[in-house]
Image (tube, rainbow, N blue to C red):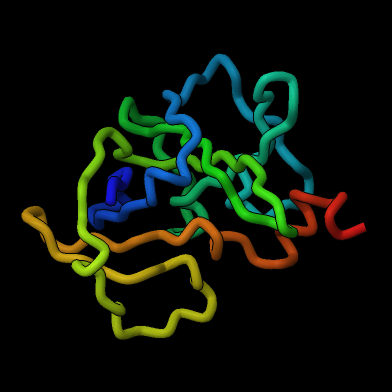
Length: 154
């Protein structure tokens, strides 16, 4: 399977490349519109082809700090399954500059139950050490889904 490799501080993570619609550089010329009252890891919404697109700051979600404004920081558009359909969701990822191929059989349960971080999936060992799979479908808690996709909760 092909994955997008990225980092959270010094740790390495992957997302399934089949869920990725597009990878874009972070451009300060087009900052997201903030959403008052949203959790700090909801960076706001982007204008994507004339439609608002929620932007999730993954370092803010996982580490409690905003994504660094680096050349390697990317906006990754992913297909997020929601309410029987698929919605585009933008993720802010650091160090998202390459892909990696890993066999599904290489992944194993991390051995920890993280109820507040269900998006943390299994781990795999490869040449650079361990990588952990971030499960897009478990990324958003229900209250944030209601905030970002209000029409599905009306």
